[in-house]
Structures are given as C-alpha cells and as structure tokens.
Image (tube, rainbow, N blue to C red; front, top):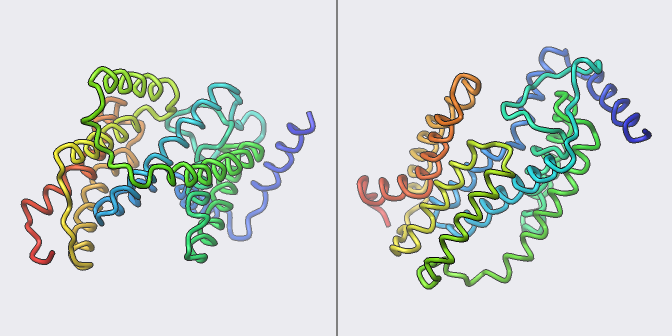
Length: 294
C-alpha cells in the first residue's frame, strides 16, 4: 500500500511539474525517452562493426539483447499494469507492443549502456551516459508509461546487467567466435533454444528479426573468414554515412507507421536491417565500392 501510494503521488507530481510551456515540454520529453530505445543503440552497434571493431559491436549487441530478455521475463512474471487515464494520469505514449509496466524497458536498456561503459577511461562519456539514464527514467514517468518504482528498478537492474557484462567479457577476450568446431547437433539445439526463448520473452516480436539478421551475418563472416580491411578515417566516415542512410530507410516505416504495418512486415524490415549492418554494408563497401585508401 505504501509503495502504491508513493508511486501515485510521485507520478502525479512529475506530470504536474513542467518548467517550460506544457506543449513544448511534452515534445521535448518524447524526444528524451528515445535515448532508451534498443533500436537507437543498434546504430552504435553498427558503427563499431563498420569501423572494424567487430568484437565490441558483438558484445554491445549481446548487452542489448540480454536487457530485452530480462525485462521481458520480469514483465511476464509480475504482470503489473501500466498507468492509465482512468486512474487520473496523463498517458502521452501508447506502447506499440503493449505489455506490462514492471520494470521499465527503456530505463533498463539505458542503464545497461551506462553500466557497460562505467569503467570507460573518458569520464565525460560516463557522466553523459549517467545523465542520459536519469533523463530516460524521468521521461518514462512524465509520459505516463511507467510508475516511479518501475524506472527505479529498471535503472538498478540495467546498471547491474551492464557491470556484470564487463566481468563476463574478460573471460572471452581471446575467443575467435568460430563455430565450425562444434557439433552440428549442438548448434541446432542451441539455435532452437534461442528461438524459443526469444519468442517467449522478447516483448517486441519484431526485434527478433533484427537479432537474427545481425547474429546470422556476424557468424557467417567468422566462418568464411571475411575480414573488413583497415580503412582511413575519411573512408570510415563515408562507410558510416552510407550505412546509416540505409538504416534510416529501413527504420522510418516502423517509426512513422507502427500501427499500419503488420508484425510480419516489421519483422522482415528488422531482419533486413540486421543483415544490412552485418553483411550488406561490409560487402557493398569493400567489394562493390572498392575504397581507394586502405
């Protein structure tokens, strides 16, 4: 009862306070909340990958996927409803994938990124990510998507996930990611298990296509020993711009028309998006465009 009263009181207080005109405040906070979107951080995954930092890209993707799965499992376990208009709250966002409220997925994802980079040598980056985590948590409450307890637990959970991820990575620093030495039966079993886990726990079904596309391309290149050549900073920039333009074209339909596109179409777009990052751009740039500087 105490927690429920505190949740309600704090949520009302947050939604009432707006230091700038309400109209502008609503749009500003809508923009802030996207910092916690897994899709946004996939752009960083792509940037690392195209820059030739495949392992860093792979580990960051694992962090995002693990955060999504943990949040999905927790929501299915607790079944806590989101704030509603009937309870007297302002609900400014309606989640495309619906689902339950506890814990906050956006807060967990953003905090996981913060925890992952917590030991980064550039303290300005750490500070910036910490501020971003607070802003995302605040935005989820202000927009009426979550109760305060949802974001508090989300931040704590995400930070723990990010910090734990770094400890696990130290044991796999020299791992080659080649799967050819494993038995085919084991690979098939692992793949089926992953599919079942994703289908059951991932609240955003269409994201599964993104995961499959990225991981499929990543391990395919490990098997055929395809290596991205070292290129100059200007070529990296050109490669990134081309890649991001393609990513934007694939993601805009989902962002702009989330309710008009079927899950199947969105799944397909996400699958192509994953392949675009892990396979299409590297092959297109290194084989077709043939950069002059290496």
